[in-house]
Length: 435
Image (cartoon, rainbow, N blue to C red; front, side, top):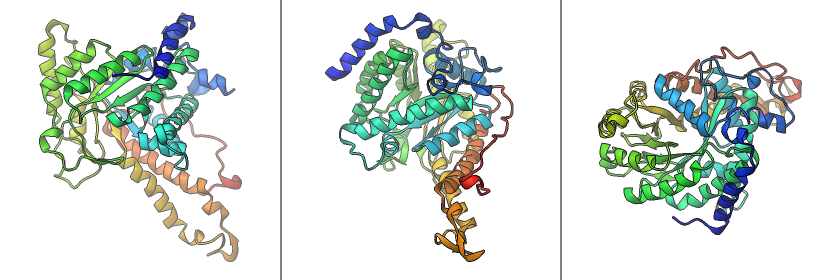
């Protein structure tokens, strides 16, 4: 795979300049703790300032994780049988709901952007030629996550979702942004990126992924790669008519992937196909086979022999198409090395449902700027203020994410206990509506 001259120059700058980044900054996960809070003039207090989570390895800290701290968190998930919810976000409001939910469940979270979500974050009025809007939107979202994650006191993995071959320039721009950020901060802007070349021949998939992993590993980025096909439709990609055999990965393919990527780095995860489908379908239409993951772990463990890890789960798996899945299938997969499950369809619905229910509750107050059941001259500003319906959407999404955290056995992971109720949160004109 060939990179642009500009990208190569950035990569060279990373190798040369990283030598001048203080060694403690480059190697210690605590060197950057609270860094964004200091940058914005809000030194860490309370959960943000915690030196160590009671239940987690010392490297894991509030804010965005990368490098060894991120790997320590993923390994902790694998060893303790839980997976981290990975939520696709398209706005700062959605991001804030994820952070609120993570703290409410005393748990880490993965916040991720698709290319379409990134473009929306940048604004649909901005031209996306050369993926400029998608790159700018994802970078903007990354800085929002970095700023707020520390304040909420939770560890976050900042990820980008499905990047097909035609979308590689989008991820190229984001990796370049991380390389520039690394020069001044000693860590990448993002935590990880997904390269989805599942529609390409396996050999090409692995060759390109290895090239990206070599580049990403230098600054502590993790690569998520996909094998097989996730069925259904999401973000403009429709796989609903793909042959059924494409929905199930073979142990030999997973081993080949593990073997090839391990030659480069251990910073990778595999989104293997075991019947996963994007979207929600009627019961019986989705046939998940989590045993495929277990069979692959056993196959690879046998191949590795004495070099196999003690837990006999060499691969960190990712569960795509998790919305609408049966809880028993979800929890079975956790024992087979799944450390991340993507959630998009269900949180899209929860956000909309919050707005829908808000409109139904205050319908008669939302039909005009003036006039409601209390009187024809009564103003309705506090009802149609967008903060009100958006907050209702956030509250409903936090509630739905609580179910996701429970399904993934990802509650009470940090050891912080119940979050204190937020103070001074009055709404529009000092009197927000109950939602």
